[in-house]
Image (cartoon, rainbow over all chains, first blue to last red; front, side):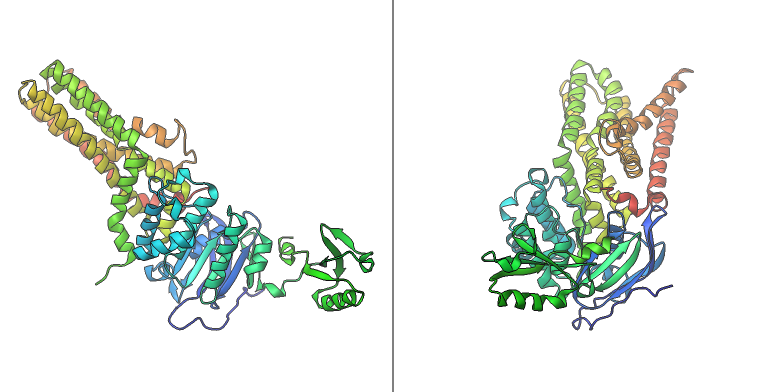
Length: 297
Length: 241
């Protein structure tokens, strides 16, 4: 039997006490097992993208790490302490895939409610109202908000107070592209010093911000690796040019992109040099396939 | 020593829940208060004996209706993932259930305080006397039974909601709980009516029946609360979405 995936990076910044140690955890709902003997350890501040098909156990993993679900077997340790202890819970933020907006409270009241739960100050409430661009929504009730606005308000609670570990279940779902990018940038900034577990169905987003990928299939971790080590079954180079050129006559098309299948990324510099030598003015070159897609196969 | 964030919010969770119930379930509260108040006023205007014999029978029904805000908040929080956050903050399911029960008690207090005080004001203003039947009807039966029925309705409603997949509609727990909530009061009344068929009951016997009935219901509520950890697992509080 293969040993459980494990990554141990450099120690976290002094005093943060942050690491996630998931030891042979079997967990699920009402006796039905969803996660089976899941083990991994994370110590390095970074973004860990959790991928997997629907029903694979991503949300169950987040709920178990957050201490909401109690494992049937095994245990979760945060900073060396069991998650059942309040001191462990206070080290992490958890954002569910649901909005979690309390009925009967305005946006401001809801954020103030969660601010008290987080031990945040009133200044923090004002800061996130501006940071998440929700000040103009502060007197509205949840029923008066769009799905994207509710998501923004929901995300605000994560930025009320700093924690060592962030468990973010689909944080950019339902957001418009501009705000999704801003949220990703905030999360990227966080990940310089914090551990961020981030689930998403958007593989391009996952590839853009993630440094590690943790793939769950049928309740087990099927891969835990650096994203740069994930290679797709084929490598397709897409090239956009300023002017069409006869040198690209043999290439396939996809929108504005000329496509060429290569054996790997190491061939890219040679192909680009060859095209430029033939006078092709290259505007953009990128990998068209997402190797993360193959992780779902 | 400074309290932890979770301890701090514990103190304010009840007040926030009550405020949310007042906003989200204002229809139930207004309905329970206004109808019981109208009935009380109309009966007090009609005759003193009608008020003393009928008003105590109605009060528990409308008290249960007025207390539904707690259960509404619970159902909404479960569906929308708020309970998931509260569990992540370290709240136990029992603490969350107790919060809902206390919210129901606050709401029922509003119904009882407004309805009883206004009805009695009209009753005495009309020159009706303060009788022992009225004192027993209100003080021994109606007011305690209203609290007991509201506690019963909330506790059964929370169990039912947590164990049921049907969240909305008239046949959902939230739709049927008011009818379930008044059952203890009806059962107690039927016992009294049955006992009276063999002759008028003495005050002692009446108090014994009422006390036993309310004690049994209160005991049932306490058993349900104590057993929550065993019967209602944490995952029952999570949304299926």
